[in-house]
Structure formats: structure tokens, C-alpha cells
Amino acid sequence: MKNNKIIQERLNLINNLKARRIIVSENVYNAMLNVPRHLFLPELNLDKAYIDTPQQIGKGQTISAPHMNAMMCEYLEIKPGDKILEIGTGSGYHAAILAELTGKDGIVYTIERIPELAIKAKEKLKELSYSNVEVIINDGTKGLESKAPFDKILVTAASPKIPKSLLVQLNPNNGILCIPVGKRHWDQDLIVINRIKGKYIKKKVCKVIFVPLIGENGFEK
Ligand code: SAH
Image (cartoon, rainbow, N blue to C red; front, side, top):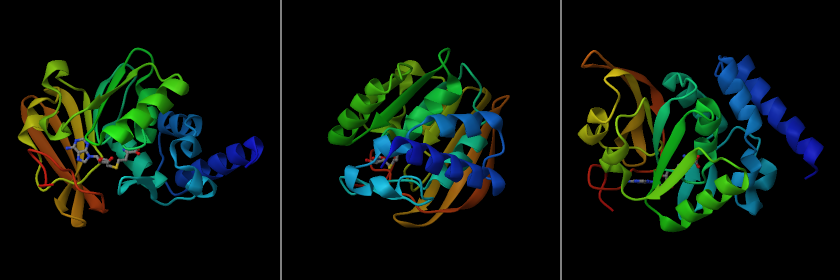
């Protein structure tokens, strides 16, 4: 695909998400416009990079449809300088959007349990000069205690329950966690939790389908 065509397709997709009121804030609009989604996908799927649909990224894993990336970013209300934890690096695409949103004064820690995906994502993020992202190979259901607390935590795989380890690693002063919770491969809700003055305020926002979160505080392998 020619570069101009790619840029036009990306602009059309992002404008469509805005027209549908899925993207409402200017920072999410700009961040998604800046990240070249096609470069995070396997070559086979290149022509579908700017269609609003999930895609296979190898190792049986999928990258969400762009409207889901946008929605989750809106719920997280990311401000420049936020310290962010993502669980489920996958292709690294969503980590790049988070990096755009938090900017050079912020940092994104992203954890992936499958080493091959983590290595590929790390290389891609480096190639695209996202120096404020750190990719870690581990079981993300335990969070990342050494770097806690986090202003924002995003989980991009579905968990059978909300891991306590993540709740306690949220900034007590307005930290936000966004996580899909439900059964393996079906009946899942996207949950958004605000931690304010020691309380956790939880809301269910919509039905979703994500690949399973596998680990100590998630599903069994
Ligand atoms: N955010 C990704 C898509 C994630 S798909 C992107 O933008 O491309 C979900 C990912 O979560 C998969 O890569 C899967 O391997 C990973 N995953 C599942 N359980 C995990 C765990 N316990 N810790 C870290 N990563 C996990």
C-alpha cells in the first residue's frame, strides 16, 4: 500500500470513530491518528489495518478492534505524565497509543506472558522511537509491585475476576482500572474502577469479547 493511501485510510477510520462518538476527546483523537496501526500487524493483514475489526497477531492472540482501543482510552482519562500499566502487550499497538497519551513526562509499563510477542512488540516500539514504554515478560495478573502505584491500569485480556493485586497497585488518589471480566471467550463485561479516597467505585460499561488472561490471578493455562 502506498503511504498516502495508508494515511488517508487511518484518517477515515479515526474520523468515523469520532462521528460515532466513540472518540470524544482531542488527545485520544490525536494519539490514534499518530500511531501507525498497520506496522503492528502481521504482513498478511496489512490491507485490513484500518478497518474497525479485531485482527490475529500470532500465537493464537488478537488485537482489539480500533473502537475498543478508543473506548478504553476514553475511560482511562489519561493525562500527560500519567504512570500507566498495561497487561497484555500483544502487538504493542495499544501501548503505543498509551505512550502518545501520557507523553514524554509519563511512562508505560506493559507486561506480556508470551515471550515471542513481547520481543516483537519491544522491537517495533523501539523502531518507532517510543522511548517511554517498557515491555516486560511476565505474568501480569500479579501487576508490577516494584513500580506501583499506577495512575492508570489497562488489562487487554479477559479475567475471571478482578485481581486484588491490581486494585492495590492503583493510585488511591483517582487511579483508574479498565478490565474485561467474565467467562473464558464469552459473557464478558468491560469494567471501569475508580479508586477515590480509599474507595473503589465500579461500573460495568458494555459487553465485550477478549482472549483470556492466563496466570496466577487469572484463568488456568
Ligand atoms: N493490547 C494488545 C492486544 C492484546 S491481546 C495490542 O494492542 O495488540 C491480549 C494479550 O494478553 C495476549 O498477547 C496474551 O498473550 C496476553 N496475556 C494473557 N494473559 C496474560 C498475563 N497473565 N500476563 C501478561 N499478558 C497476558
